[in-house]
Amino acid sequence: MIHIFFVPGMFGSTIEYVLRCFTKEYTVLHNRSICSDGSMHNFIKEFHPKQQNTLVNLANLGVDAITTPIYPFCDMHLPEILQTMQLQHVDYHTDKFVLLHTNSVSGAELNILFQYHKIAAGQKIKLGLESFCGNNAHNIKNWNASYTNWKDMQTWELREWFSLFYVSWVQEWIQSQYEIDNKFLKIDHLDVLNDFVPTMEKIINHCGLTLTSGLEKFGIEWRHKQQYIVDEFDLLNQIISHTVSNKDLTWNPINVISEAIIQQRLRSLGYEIRCDQLNTFPTDSKTLYNLLEKV
Image (cartoon, rainbow, N blue to C red):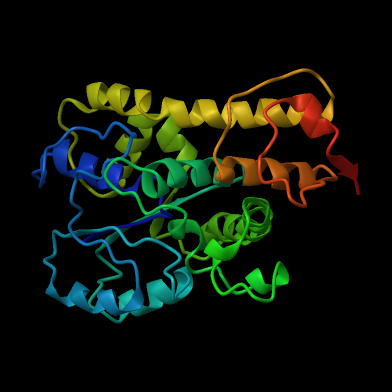
């Protein structure tokens, strides 16, 4: 078997598709085009576990199966997932293992935008903000004791809340590479984004497969459809730099997840936004600058 562990947004579906469509040893299950949001969610993955109770089905897979476990599960972190899989007929000596991770805070924040655009607001998968907030409602009463669900929060509260709790995700996504051994091929998800063909060739070779034709053409189309998210992330960087330096910049309204990233990034630079009742986020750097407090 081949096992591709990835955080949602880090291109696990794309990698399984490439292994099936551009190697001699596999035949693609569903040869469909890339979605307009840049995702591969039209492609149906063979075995894509998201929680502990699905791992028992590993015993029903053949030796040529490709699995794509996400991490963390809602009920397990990466080391626990690996331990459970080893007990469920995974041959740790002969199977091939790939881990998608990130090496930086900025890489993790970019991945959050990929999650937003492809999962929360995607073409094929449209889970809404529940995909971010559904399992993270443990501290909403810090904003209002009467709240029972994240949906009770005002926009400014939701923005601040998310800007605080996503930091723990970042730490786990970076740390994951240190929780595995050298059986794994470790791939920074930004290498998939920025160096597509060589990175895919590295994965194909690690899995003992034989590359066929067409990968470069596919990679060009795939990368083009990711660009709008990269452009949005570049805009966030511009907003932060122009705001801190009090230089003029205007922008169109952005989503609350991008706003939360800005809030956390400013916090990391030593600034808090006076965000109480700020349900409509500024769209120019001068207004945002005047809301900053140095801490």
